[in-house]
Length: 214
Image 1 (spheres, helix red, strand yellow):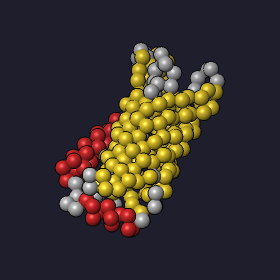
Image 2 (cartoon, helix red, strand yellow; image 1 turned 90 degrees about the vertical axis):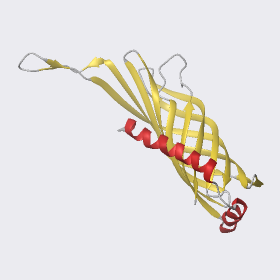
Image 3 (cartoon, one colour; image 1 turned 30 degrees about the vertical axis):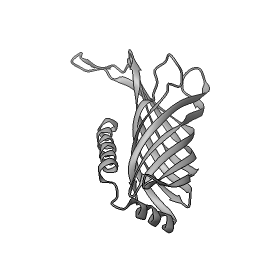
Image 4 (cartoon, helix red, strand yellow; image 1 turned 180 degrees about the vertical axis):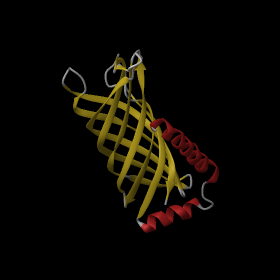
C-alpha cells in the first residue's frame, strides 16, 4: 500500500511545480496584497527530500522520501501537519524503511515584492512519530503441511518512536502557488531499536516542496 501511495505523491509534486512555473497569477502583486489584508493563508503541498543514514555503514531506513503537508499561517505564525514516507535501503537479507508523521510550528519572516511575489524565511520545529519497518528475510516461519511441503515468509518488525525535527524553510510565493526548500535535522531520542538498547539518532537532510495557497 505504501508503494502505491508514492505514485500519486510524485504526480502531485510534478503537477504543482508545473502550475507554479507555467500558470502563476495574472496579477501576482494584487494577490499578495489580498493575502496580506486577510491576515491568514492555507498551504497545501507535496514534497520530496533526502535524509542521511543515522548510523554510517549500516542499512538506513531513510534516504529518499516523498510526502505531503497541510498548514496554516496566521500573521506569520505557522501551524501544520506533515507526513513523509522514506524508501529506505537494503543490504543482503535486511531491508528497512520509515514513515514520519506529526505536527509543525514556526514563524515566518516575509519579504514582499520579490519578482511580483513574496519570499518567506520560516524557522520551525516538527514533533511526531516515526515508524521504522525492518524485514529480515533470513528469519523465516516454516509451516509444514500434511503433504510434506513448507511455506516461508520473511520476518517484519515495526518500531515506533518520538521524533523532533528543527529546521529552516525558505519559501517563495506567487499568487496562489509556492515553492519551498527546507533544511534541518531529525532527532529520534531513546530509540529501542536492537539488542544494543536505547540510543539516539541524529540525521540531516533537505526537502523541496511545491504547492498551493488558499
